[in-house]
Length: 311
Image 1 (cartoon, rainbow, N blue to C red):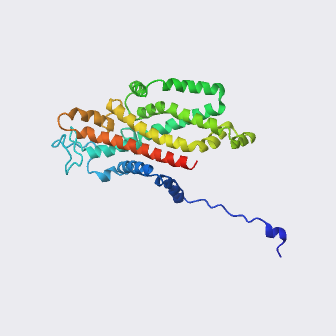
Image 2 (spheres, rainbow, N blue to C red):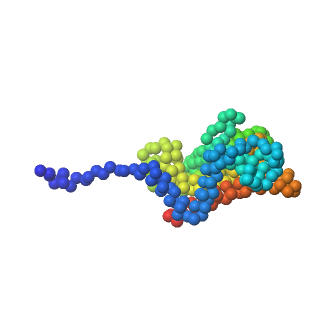
C-alpha cells in the first residue's frame, strides 16, 4: 500500500532533446520569417549549390579552351559566352564560386573544405573573439594594449592594408586568407569586447566567478555563447566584405594567381575587351560578385531584424 510520501513524490520526466532535423528547421524558421532573409538565402544557396555540383552544371572545365570561339556572346554551346581564350564563362563562374565558398587551394593538388573567404572570416573570428573577450573581461592595461594595437591597424585604409599585406606575402589563396584575417580581426574584436562589457555584469557571470570558475571558462562558455547572435550576423556581413575584397585583389593582380577562375581577375582581364564589343567576360563575374555580396547582406539584415523583434 502506497504511503503519503510515495504518493506525493515528484515524478521524474526524462528530458527529450529535439532531433537534428527539428533543430535545423527551427533555425531555418527564423530565416523564413523574414522576406528579406529568404531572398538573401535563396541567392546564397544558389551559388553554394552550383559550386558544390559544378561538374553537373557544365560539360566544360574552367581551363578548357575553344580556339574557334574566343570572346563570343551567349550561345547554345556557351550559355554565357567565352573569354579571350575561348574558355566557357559559365564554367569559370561556378568553379570560381567553389574557390570562394566551398574549396580552398593550398597547393596545386591539395584543396581543403571551405572557401577562401569563409576561412578568412573563420580565422578572424577566432582571433578577434579571443582578443575581444580578453579586453572586455579583464579590462585595465590588458584592454588598453589590445585596443590601441587594433586601433592602429584600423587607422590604415582597408584597401591599402590589403595591398601592403599581399605585396609583402605574394599572391596565393593562403595569403588571401591571411590578409582577410588581419583586416577583419580588429572589427570583430571591438564587437566582441562591447558585448563582453555588457554581459560580464550579469548575475550568472557573478555566480560563475563565485563558484571559482577559470576566467577562460567564463569567457568561452558563459560570455561567448550569450553573445553569439550579433557575432553570427556580423560574420555573414564579413563574408560578403571578404568576397568583395577577393574581387578587388584579383582585379589588381594581387589575388589568387591564374589560371584559377578568380572572379576579380576575370573582371580585370575582361575589361580590356569591353570597347571591342565583347563585354561578357567582365560583365558576368561582376554580376556574380555583386549578387553574392547582396545575398549575404540581405540574409544578415533579415536575421538582424528577426533577432531584434524577439528582444
